Image (cartoon, rainbow, N blue to C red; front, side, top):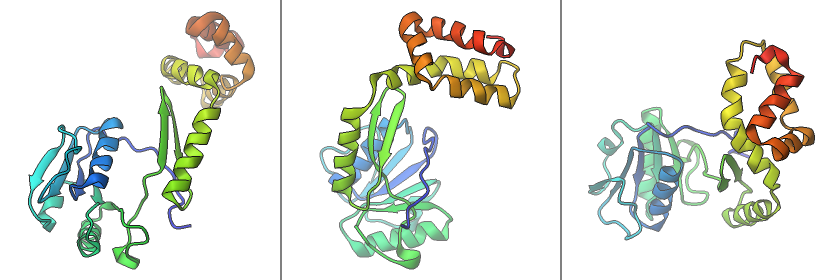
Length: 212
């Protein structure tokens, strides 16, 4: 499996450059913006109506200079030859590039990453890659239907508790133990009963060294 190392990337201030202006490029742009990206450049001779307004549009045929300043690149045209050139130019600059045409290219003409089918609710993000986009979407939708609402509630609570635990002066071992305790049914029951304040009191009682 070529694309085997999953990660969550902060794209807030990274310039993402999308080559192509069709429906696929529009989806890529929308996904980046939804993930918090504030710098998205789309390069194409024409643009589909659903390309987001919040992107920088460059109305032109692709040239290597359009990658200037990029930190993430998407080759999203309907031309395999153009996509191949985008990949080669990105690799020459040491940039990571996603190539949208399935199986398009090999060696230095192949892309570096795929974008998984994604489910997001609150602080929980689930990404699925399955070797087929359609299968990944089906698995994602099945997982979304099965997700435990308690996990969503706890993930939201962790936005407040994680910084307190991280900066509370305890050693790494105590912090790890606290985070493990917060992933238990007992912790979720404490959250249900007393909200975030009740949960904070519960974990502080178990781990007084945290100084919460």
